[in-house]
Amino acid sequence: MTNRKIKRVRWRVLVMLFFLSMVTYLDRVCISTTAPAMMQDLGLSPTQMGWVFSIFIFGYALFEIPGGWMGDHWGARSVLTRIVLWWSFFTAATAFAWSFASLLVIRLLFGMGEAGAFPNCASSIARWFPPTERARAQGTLLTGTRVGGALAPGLVVLLMGWLGWRQVFTVFAGLGAVWAVIWYWWYRNTPKEHRAVHAEELAEIRENQPVAPARSLPVDWRALLRSRNLLAICTMYSGYSFGLYFYLTWLPTYLLKARGVSLAGIGFWAGLPLLVGAGSNVFGGFVSDALARRAGLRWGRCLPPGLGLLFSAILLLVSLALQNPVAALIAMVASFACADVILGPAWATCLDIGKEQAGTVTGCMNSFGQIGGMLSPILFGWTVQRWGSWNVPLLVTAGCYFMSAAMWLVIDPEKPLGLDAPGSRLQLILSGDDPKAKTN
Image: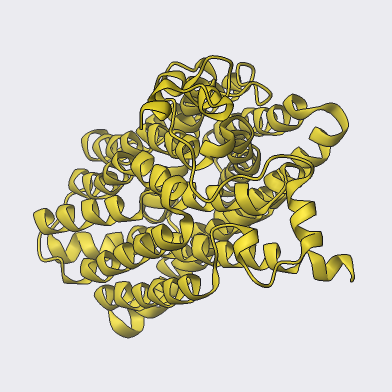
C-alpha cells in the first residue's frame, strides 16, 4: 500500500473543510462589497453600516465558545451541519432586509448561527491529523477563507450587475446548503468510524499518542479561564482581528472614497489582500511545523506569527506615508499578507495546549478575539462620519498589530492550559479518582 493511499482519507477531510471555509468567507465578504448599494437603497449612514458589520461579530463571538463545546461533546458531523444550514438561511434572509433594524436582527442571527464553525473545524483536525501536521492542516483550511474572500468582491460585482445586490445573497446561501448535505453524508467524527480509513493511516494519525475521543471529557473551566496562556492568546487574536475586519468590511468603501478606485477596480483591489493572504496561510503553517520539528514547539509556533505581525504593523504605517495610491495599496496588501502568517500557528497552538478540548479552546480564542473585530467596523464608520478621516483608525490598527506581536513573547505552546495538569478534574477522571464520577 502506498503512502499516498494511506493519507487519502484525512486529506479528503481537509478538502471538505477547505471548501467550508471558502463558503464562509464568500458569505462574510459579500456584504462589504454590497455595502455602498445597500446604504443607498436602505438609507443607511456610515455609522449605521458600521453597526451592521459589528452586530454580526457580536453574535458570532457570543456563541463561539458554546459552538466549540458542542463540537467537542457531540462531534463535528452533526454540529457543523447545523451551523452551515443556519448561516445559509440567514445569508438568504439578508436579501429581504427592508430597514436598518431588520438588517441588524438578520445579521445578529447570522453571526450566532455561524459561531463555532472554525472551532469545529479545529476539533476535526485534532482528531484526524497528528500533531506534526496540524499547523499545515490549519493553514490549508484557513487558506479557504482567503480564497473565498478574494473571489467574493469580483463575483459580487458581477452578480450585482446581473441580479442586483439582494439576489447575490440567495445565490451564496445555496452553496452552503449543498456543502452541509455532502458533509453529513460522508464525514465521521473520528478516523476509526470511517470505513475508508486503513489501519496504517490510523497509526500515522495517532503518532504514538492517545487518540482524541469522539466526545470530549468534561471541561475544567476554572483551569481554562485562569490560564495566562489563554489570556495572551485571546489578546493576540483580538489585535489581529481588529485589522482583519477592516479588510472584510470597510476596504471596498475605503478604496472608493479614500483612494479613488473605480467600481470595476474594487473587485481586484478588495480581493487582492485575501488572495495573497491565502499563500501566507499555507506558508505560515508549513514554516511553523518545519521549525517545530527542528527547533522545538515554542520556536515553531511563536516565531513566524510574531515576526509576521511586527512586519504587518510596519508595512501598514508605510502605506499611510506613501502618496502614490498604487504603492500605498501594495504596501497595505503586503501588510495583510504578513499578518495572515499567524493563522496556522495560532490555531495549531490551541490544539497543542487544548488537547481533547481543542474545540472549546479555539472557541475561546476566536470568541474573545472578536472583541477587536467588533470594535473595528464601528470605529472606522464613526471616525469617517465625524471627521472624514481614515488615517486615525488605520494608525490604531497598526498599534493593535504591534500589541499582538508582543503577545507571542508570552504564549507558550508547550504548556497545557491546566486541563490535564495534576489535580485537575480531567486528570482525576483519567486516573479514576474523580469523586463525582464515582457517585454517578
